[in-house]
Length: 540
Image (cartoon, rainbow, N blue to C red; front, top):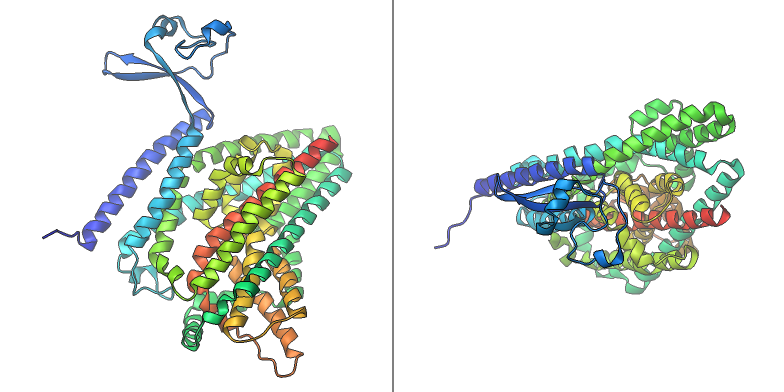
């Protein structure tokens, strides 16, 4: 008979494998910190002592022009001013180009796939989201995945987010120079954000009213949803603490933008107050002229240092997304897509695909005059990181690195647009909230027509603006849309209201869908940065 591994043996194997991968990635991290993630040219020649190949980094040596006849494929070191000892043995050497960006892309993709596979192998069908990880059948392995993905990787990203936002916004504002130009750039940026979110919410409305996935929900499933909502204390408390209505959401947003203590707000991880303070400080430094130049130089140096740190942390992305996806799938499982809720999941994913692969590329091509799919390819690491971290704020360091280093976006545009977009530009969230509310109304047999549907689109857009760039924030702000719908239905005699407990229907699949809508959120930020960069270059 075929011998099977016991759960304890499998946990030990996975733990050792995670340690091995982490050890290799730490070495890659050190390599990235030394080489800045740029292309490194190596001259490889035999090493007699160790009977292996020895690599000499010659990428930083000054280039020397060569005649065209010496630049063939077999001319080793042509065009490079090499040391004499290296030139002497150049005939036996091989020159290769090692591209860390390619290595990192492959590793991140492997981490995503590996996380899904390992998570599904560890999935416990008896586990529910109301339980703690200690109650999981593979508690040790799940705890290790959470530690690697959330504690280590997400902790490092959160550590650099606020310093990166503060320095990048100040550098971006001071680079603009003229306050009037800053106002124009800010106006176009906000117009782009609101416009794309309205388009996304409208697209979600059209799809959910056409497909009507809520009609497949039975009364038994509605009862299970009620019980799931009542037993899930974390979701229930977050929803009850959330803002009430659109006015409440706007008041809360303004109160967060203007804090009593910006240092305390930064300590609590609030992004909007840091952005607002950095914009004001950048404007003041611009008006100071030469007197403010030392501070601008200091902030610029700090920004360069933080970006250097980001380059290193990015090399931990493969093991980070492996842990995060493995932990998520182990708790939820992929079977949720095959249930009756699968129609709702299909509608959301279809809308995200249309918006991310058709609408945003069209905007990028028409207004930014850029090949959108080449730009999407250049942003691939940010997209995969967004899928794994499920947080646009945590992905911000990777987004800025890809946009400036690979996408050709100026640091002035990226420093102003991307931090702001990671907080208030939520195309995927706006689409999701419109689909979710109408789906729940369909599931409970509540007809929505005309004015109510328009209110859903508008409210979903403003609710998405108030959503934080953290996992499952859209589930909390979705209550704003539900309250607006109920307020409108209350004015219609005989119309039933939509219970808040209805969100129990979508809680189980929300985390997985949130990963994909985070990808669309980050892609929308990147397109906005490219658009603003083109406008700024035309004016300059």
